[in-house]
Image (tube, rainbow, N blue to C red):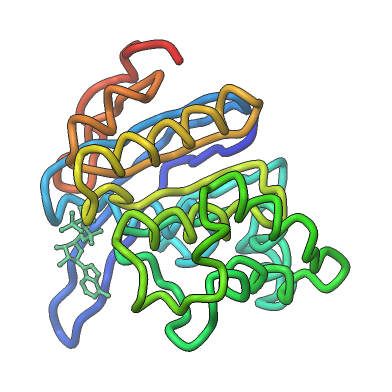
Length: 227
Ligand SMILES: Nc1ncnc2c1ncn2[C@@H]1O[C@H](COP(=O)(O)OP(=O)(O)OP(=O)(O)O)[C@@H](O)[C@H]1O
Protein backbone atom coordinates (compact mmCIF):
# COMPACT_ATOMS: atom_id res chain seq x y z
CA UNK A 1 0.00 0.00 0.00
CA UNK A 2 1.36 3.39 -1.02
CA UNK A 3 -0.59 5.75 1.23
CA UNK A 4 -2.61 5.01 4.32
CA UNK A 5 -4.47 7.51 6.48
CA UNK A 6 -5.70 6.15 9.80
CA UNK A 7 -8.25 8.16 11.72
CA UNK A 8 -6.77 11.52 10.72
CA UNK A 9 -8.09 14.65 12.43
CA UNK A 10 -6.80 18.19 12.13
CA UNK A 11 -7.95 21.10 14.27
CA UNK A 12 -6.72 24.62 13.56
CA UNK A 13 -6.37 26.76 16.64
CA UNK A 14 -7.09 30.39 15.82
CA UNK A 15 -6.80 32.48 18.98
CA UNK A 16 -9.57 31.33 21.28
CA UNK A 17 -11.57 29.62 18.51
CA UNK A 18 -10.78 26.34 16.82
CA UNK A 19 -11.84 24.81 13.51
CA UNK A 20 -11.95 21.08 13.03
CA UNK A 21 -11.02 20.87 9.35
CA UNK A 22 -10.60 17.08 9.13
CA UNK A 23 -12.48 14.73 11.42
CA UNK A 24 -11.51 11.07 11.68
CA UNK A 25 -10.64 10.28 8.04
CA UNK A 26 -9.33 6.84 7.16
CA UNK A 27 -8.49 5.83 3.60
CA UNK A 28 -5.84 4.11 1.57
CA UNK A 29 -4.33 4.32 -1.87
CA UNK A 30 -2.49 1.57 -3.68
CA UNK A 31 0.17 1.92 -6.36
CA UNK A 32 -1.54 2.25 -9.75
CA UNK A 33 -4.63 3.85 -8.24
CA UNK A 34 -6.15 7.27 -9.01
CA UNK A 35 -8.51 8.39 -6.25
CA UNK A 36 -10.47 11.65 -6.26
CA UNK A 37 -11.73 13.24 -3.05
CA UNK A 38 -14.62 15.53 -3.85
CA UNK A 39 -16.41 18.05 -1.69
CA UNK A 40 -17.57 21.68 -1.41
CA UNK A 41 -15.39 24.65 -0.51
CA UNK A 42 -14.18 24.64 3.08
CA UNK A 43 -14.92 20.97 3.75
CA UNK A 44 -11.28 20.13 4.51
CA UNK A 45 -9.91 18.89 1.16
CA UNK A 46 -6.70 20.94 1.15
CA UNK A 47 -6.07 20.18 4.80
CA UNK A 48 -6.46 16.46 4.13
CA UNK A 49 -4.07 16.60 1.16
CA UNK A 50 -1.39 18.58 3.03
CA UNK A 51 -1.65 16.15 5.92
CA UNK A 52 -1.37 13.17 3.58
CA UNK A 53 1.69 14.73 1.94
CA UNK A 54 3.76 15.23 5.06
CA UNK A 55 3.32 19.01 4.90
CA UNK A 56 0.94 19.44 7.84
CA UNK A 57 1.02 17.32 10.96
CA UNK A 58 -2.42 16.02 11.91
CA UNK A 59 -3.72 16.69 15.41
CA UNK A 60 -4.28 12.95 15.72
CA UNK A 61 -4.10 9.88 13.54
CA UNK A 62 -1.35 8.27 11.49
CA UNK A 63 -0.11 8.89 7.95
CA UNK A 64 1.90 6.11 6.32
CA UNK A 65 3.56 6.71 2.96
CA UNK A 66 5.37 3.80 1.39
CA UNK A 67 5.53 2.13 4.82
CA UNK A 68 6.91 5.17 6.63
CA UNK A 69 5.39 7.78 8.92
CA UNK A 70 6.68 11.17 7.71
CA UNK A 71 5.78 12.82 11.01
CA UNK A 72 8.12 10.55 12.95
CA UNK A 73 11.06 11.97 10.93
CA UNK A 74 13.07 15.12 11.59
CA UNK A 75 12.09 18.12 9.46
CA UNK A 76 15.11 17.58 7.18
CA UNK A 77 14.46 13.87 6.76
CA UNK A 78 10.81 14.59 6.03
CA UNK A 79 11.67 17.22 3.40
CA UNK A 80 14.04 14.79 1.70
CA UNK A 81 11.52 11.95 1.89
CA UNK A 82 8.80 14.19 0.41
CA UNK A 83 11.05 15.32 -2.42
CA UNK A 84 11.92 11.73 -3.33
CA UNK A 85 8.49 10.19 -2.92
CA UNK A 86 5.79 12.76 -3.68
CA UNK A 87 5.03 15.15 -6.51
CA UNK A 88 2.67 18.01 -5.68
CA UNK A 89 0.45 19.87 -8.16
CA UNK A 90 -1.57 22.86 -6.93
CA UNK A 91 -4.26 25.08 -8.44
CA UNK A 92 -2.00 28.12 -8.18
CA UNK A 93 0.98 26.34 -9.81
CA UNK A 94 3.49 27.72 -7.24
CA UNK A 95 6.23 28.28 -9.81
CA UNK A 96 9.24 30.41 -8.89
CA UNK A 97 8.60 33.65 -10.83
CA UNK A 98 12.23 34.55 -11.56
CA UNK A 99 13.29 31.08 -12.74
CA UNK A 100 12.87 29.84 -16.31
CA UNK A 101 10.67 26.86 -17.20
CA UNK A 102 13.76 24.64 -17.29
CA UNK A 103 14.99 25.89 -13.90
CA UNK A 104 11.56 25.49 -12.31
CA UNK A 105 11.37 21.89 -13.51
CA UNK A 106 14.88 21.17 -12.25
CA UNK A 107 14.31 22.83 -8.86
CA UNK A 108 13.11 19.72 -6.92
CA UNK A 109 16.40 18.07 -7.88
CA UNK A 110 18.15 20.55 -5.59
CA UNK A 111 16.21 19.13 -2.65
CA UNK A 112 17.51 15.64 -3.43
CA UNK A 113 21.15 16.25 -4.13
CA UNK A 114 21.92 12.85 -5.59
CA UNK A 115 19.11 13.14 -8.10
CA UNK A 116 19.61 16.60 -9.68
CA UNK A 117 19.06 15.53 -13.24
CA UNK A 118 19.25 17.91 -16.20
CA UNK A 119 18.62 15.11 -18.73
CA UNK A 120 15.37 14.15 -17.04
CA UNK A 121 14.32 17.83 -16.94
CA UNK A 122 14.90 18.01 -20.70
CA UNK A 123 12.90 14.83 -21.31
CA UNK A 124 10.01 16.24 -19.29
CA UNK A 125 10.18 19.54 -21.18
CA UNK A 126 9.76 17.60 -24.43
CA UNK A 127 7.07 15.31 -23.05
CA UNK A 128 4.99 18.26 -21.86
CA UNK A 129 5.40 20.22 -25.11
CA UNK A 130 7.43 22.99 -23.48
CA UNK A 131 10.54 22.92 -25.67
CA UNK A 132 9.84 26.34 -27.23
CA UNK A 133 9.06 27.79 -23.81
CA UNK A 134 11.91 26.39 -21.72
CA UNK A 135 13.80 29.69 -21.38
CA UNK A 136 10.71 31.76 -20.55
CA UNK A 137 9.76 32.81 -17.03
CA UNK A 138 6.27 31.76 -15.81
CA UNK A 139 4.77 35.25 -16.38
CA UNK A 140 5.26 34.75 -20.14
CA UNK A 141 3.29 31.49 -20.19
CA UNK A 142 -0.40 30.66 -20.54
CA UNK A 143 -2.19 29.03 -17.60
CA UNK A 144 -2.16 25.67 -19.35
CA UNK A 145 1.59 25.94 -19.95
CA UNK A 146 2.20 26.92 -16.33
CA UNK A 147 0.31 23.89 -15.10
CA UNK A 148 2.26 21.65 -17.50
CA UNK A 149 5.48 23.07 -15.99
CA UNK A 150 4.13 22.27 -12.51
CA UNK A 151 3.24 18.76 -13.64
CA UNK A 152 6.70 18.23 -15.19
CA UNK A 153 8.31 19.56 -12.01
CA UNK A 154 6.27 17.13 -9.91
CA UNK A 155 7.70 14.24 -11.94
CA UNK A 156 11.39 15.25 -11.82
CA UNK A 157 12.39 13.01 -8.93
CA UNK A 158 10.31 10.08 -10.24
CA UNK A 159 7.85 10.11 -7.33
CA UNK A 160 5.66 7.17 -6.45
CA UNK A 161 2.77 9.40 -5.48
CA UNK A 162 1.24 12.57 -6.92
CA UNK A 163 -0.94 14.72 -4.67
CA UNK A 164 -3.00 17.26 -6.59
CA UNK A 165 -5.06 20.06 -5.05
CA UNK A 166 -7.69 21.45 -7.45
CA UNK A 167 -5.15 21.30 -10.31
CA UNK A 168 -7.73 22.10 -13.00
CA UNK A 169 -9.12 25.13 -11.13
CA UNK A 170 -7.40 27.69 -13.36
CA UNK A 171 -7.57 25.75 -16.64
CA UNK A 172 -9.92 25.75 -19.63
CA UNK A 173 -11.48 22.50 -20.74
CA UNK A 174 -8.72 21.48 -23.16
CA UNK A 175 -5.87 22.09 -20.71
CA UNK A 176 -7.80 20.44 -17.88
CA UNK A 177 -8.16 17.33 -20.06
CA UNK A 178 -4.43 17.30 -20.85
CA UNK A 179 -3.58 17.50 -17.16
CA UNK A 180 -6.09 14.85 -16.10
CA UNK A 181 -4.88 12.49 -18.80
CA UNK A 182 -1.32 12.88 -17.52
CA UNK A 183 -2.50 12.02 -14.01
CA UNK A 184 -4.41 9.00 -15.30
CA UNK A 185 -1.35 7.91 -17.29
CA UNK A 186 0.86 8.27 -14.21
CA UNK A 187 -1.48 5.91 -12.33
CA UNK A 188 -1.70 3.47 -15.24
CA UNK A 189 2.12 3.26 -15.18
CA UNK A 190 2.02 2.23 -11.51
CA UNK A 191 2.04 5.55 -9.63
CA UNK A 192 -0.57 6.59 -7.09
CA UNK A 193 -2.66 9.74 -7.53
CA UNK A 194 -4.72 11.46 -4.86
CA UNK A 195 -6.66 14.41 -6.22
CA UNK A 196 -8.86 16.74 -4.17
CA UNK A 197 -11.33 18.82 -6.12
CA UNK A 198 -14.89 19.99 -6.58
CA UNK A 199 -14.54 19.59 -10.37
CA UNK A 200 -16.69 16.74 -11.77
CA UNK A 201 -14.48 16.51 -14.88
CA UNK A 202 -11.57 15.57 -12.67
CA UNK A 203 -13.57 12.90 -10.92
CA UNK A 204 -14.50 11.22 -14.20
CA UNK A 205 -10.84 10.37 -14.81
CA UNK A 206 -10.38 8.72 -11.42
CA UNK A 207 -10.94 5.06 -10.62
CA UNK A 208 -12.57 5.89 -7.31
CA UNK A 209 -14.36 8.92 -5.93
CA UNK A 210 -14.67 9.60 -2.23
CA UNK A 211 -16.86 12.38 -0.86
CA UNK A 212 -15.93 14.61 2.03
CA UNK A 213 -18.23 16.94 3.96
CA UNK A 214 -17.40 18.95 7.07
CA UNK A 215 -14.11 17.09 7.39
CA UNK A 216 -15.69 13.61 7.31
CA UNK A 217 -15.84 11.06 4.54
CA UNK A 218 -19.50 10.65 3.66
CA UNK A 219 -19.46 7.76 1.24
CA UNK A 220 -17.31 4.73 0.68
CA UNK A 221 -15.17 4.57 -2.40
CA UNK A 222 -17.25 3.80 -5.48
CA UNK A 223 -15.95 2.61 -8.81
CA UNK A 224 -15.86 5.32 -11.47
CA UNK A 225 -14.53 4.99 -15.00
CA UNK A 226 -11.66 2.56 -14.77
CA UNK A 227 -8.55 4.05 -16.35
N1 LIG B 1 -4.43 27.80 8.63
C1 LIG B 1 -5.71 27.77 9.01
N2 LIG B 1 -6.11 28.31 10.18
C2 LIG B 1 -7.40 28.27 10.58
N3 LIG B 1 -8.38 27.69 9.86
C3 LIG B 1 -8.06 27.14 8.68
C4 LIG B 1 -6.72 27.15 8.19
N4 LIG B 1 -6.70 26.51 6.98
C5 LIG B 1 -7.97 26.13 6.74
N5 LIG B 1 -8.79 26.50 7.75
C6 LIG B 1 -10.22 26.21 7.87
O1 LIG B 1 -10.39 24.80 7.82
C7 LIG B 1 -11.54 24.45 7.05
C8 LIG B 1 -11.13 23.53 5.90
O2 LIG B 1 -10.29 24.29 5.00
P1 LIG B 1 -9.65 23.62 3.69
O3 LIG B 1 -8.85 24.68 3.01
O4 LIG B 1 -8.98 22.37 4.07
O5 LIG B 1 -10.96 23.27 2.85
P2 LIG B 1 -11.11 23.01 1.27
O6 LIG B 1 -12.20 21.99 1.14
O7 LIG B 1 -9.80 22.70 0.67
O8 LIG B 1 -11.64 24.41 0.74
P3 LIG B 1 -11.47 25.06 -0.75
O9 LIG B 1 -12.11 24.07 -1.70
O10 LIG B 1 -12.23 26.35 -0.64
O11 LIG B 1 -10.00 25.23 -0.96
C9 LIG B 1 -12.17 25.77 6.62
O12 LIG B 1 -13.18 26.11 7.55
C10 LIG B 1 -11.01 26.76 6.69
O13 LIG B 1 -11.47 28.05 6.94
